[in-house]
Length: 181
Image (cartoon, rainbow, N blue to C red; front, side, top):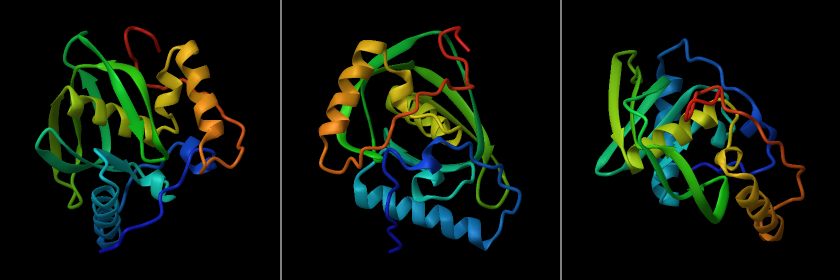
């Protein structure tokens, strides 16, 4: 088992856009294995490479009975239906807040061998796809919270035992959501 330490809120790698994967090699397969092992160990629904300190566009997921990984993912909305529900992050441990996401998305990318993959997600899987792809762009789900909830969240984060006092940065996702870019 190759469980790795997860980078926590405040670590600059979480706010940096990850690079496209160009080599589908043993190193990539090892990274995906580490992502799966760490995600399972922590009980997460997904985990992105930047959360392990690796600036590559790769994530794993395990939700709604579907487990897999995507390399260089791109997602699109299947419709405009929204979902509002609790969302957490392994890089912000023990805390969650209601976050609005699209309910139905399709993600396209590659597997560790460079073969094309398409995953259609609804509800939790759609949320995970959007959440993990945001990680690859240096965006945290805190950036998607409404202003009042984000203020509440930051207060709770500042009180968390693991928080090191980092100054928060709020980013805008490059992925369109609800007609806003």
